[in-house]
Amino acid sequence: MQFGSLTLKSNLFLSPLAGYTNLPFRLVVREVGGVGLCTTDLVNARSLIEKNPKAFKLIETSPADSPLAVQLFGSVAEEMRDAALMVEARGAVSVDINMGCPVKKVIKIGGGSAMMTELDKTAALVRGMVNAVKIPVTAKMRLGWDDDNLTAPDLARALEDAGVAAIFVHGRTREQGFGGTVNLAGIRKVVEAVKKIPVIGNGDIVTPQAAKMMLDETGCAGVSIGRGAFYDPWIFKRTLEYLKTCRRRREESLINSAAINETPHVVSYENNIGLPPEPPFSERVRVMCRHLDLMVEVFGEELGCRMFRKVAPWYAKRFGPCHEFNKKVVQVATKAQFHEILENYIRWRQQFLDERGELLPRFQQAPLVASFMREPDSSTRTHIPVPKGPVEVW
Ligand SMILES: Cc1cc2nc3c(=O)[nH]c(=O)nc-3n(C[C@H](O)[C@H](O)[C@H](O)COP(=O)(O)O)c2cc1C
Image (cartoon, rainbow, N blue to C red; front, side, top):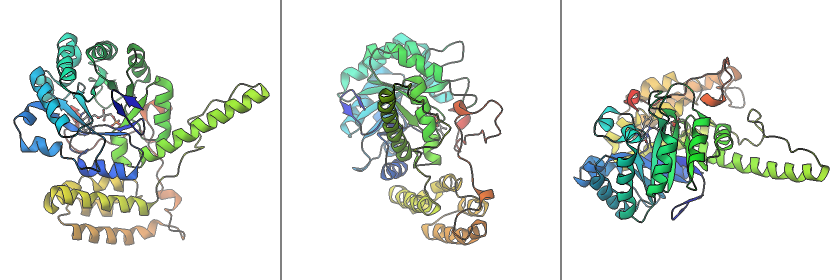
């Protein structure tokens, strides 16, 4: 996949999740594989210019953390331009502008979702950045303020004219927060509004089938995954494999149908044909331990372990019964303590396993289902977890 001067290995993106998409997590996702481009948490442009150490920590990177986009927020054109120049000089391959953040402190200064309501001012700000840097400038937005103000198609087109190289769109309005259904038709309208730049769809992708459905139904060029990746860092790898298999099966079906003069069959999202298996428990544990090692490397043992208290329970969501693990891990202070907690948990967990070491059927969890794939009255688990933090404001 390509935008601006950038060629990416896949059309799968890691969405920014403030407080979570830090260097260790990005490295984990990259090591597992399948992701085309990772983005940092959003960074205040002014804080970067003022050389605030916290802002610099947010853009901390390493050679293995590539290709990397830095997401900026701010509403002062000169500050956004200068911050873009700074991140370009530090090796970012693209710079993303946050236009979809409904956090009060971001809206208050005219950034985030507020930008979606002021087209001309926003286009001028973007033009200043595009003219200043050589790397592509992208924009991330929601569909609009509310259902009566679905401004994303107009904004996307205005931004394309201002030189933006790609658009990321979360298929919900600001008013929706994280509730309700991701609006695929709304994303499609954005795809149709732009002339040639790629639009990347986002929202609720928790399985490879959901990624495929968003691509198929919206015509978007790629998908960006946030919570789904935190819940399951293997999602990119599995999605990439799944998409390849579906493409191959589709081509074979076209050839066969042409030979016998029949309509090719349509891919069904419900069947699991071509779906790579989920990682086993041992692999989940291996990657979780690697994540902790990286947290300690980047943040030091004390802070790294403290931060890992909110990370480990996300891995545990797919362990089967995990309360014994969670109640201890939320107090972890050292790496040695973490490994002791883990060993005790692995012993405790054996009571839920069959003779092959697999979870007994009644303890196995069904995969999450994206809002746009749910049956209206389905009994499937509907809630997609939202990480701890000021989520009511995202
Ligand atoms: C805890 C949290 C932090 C987020 N931080 C950011 C951010 O820094 N910048 C941004 O553009 N979006 C942010 N978002 C929105 C996500 O990037 C994404 O658009 C949204 O979560 C929907 O995608 P998902 O369902 O794949 O998570 C955040 C969302 C959450 C839950």
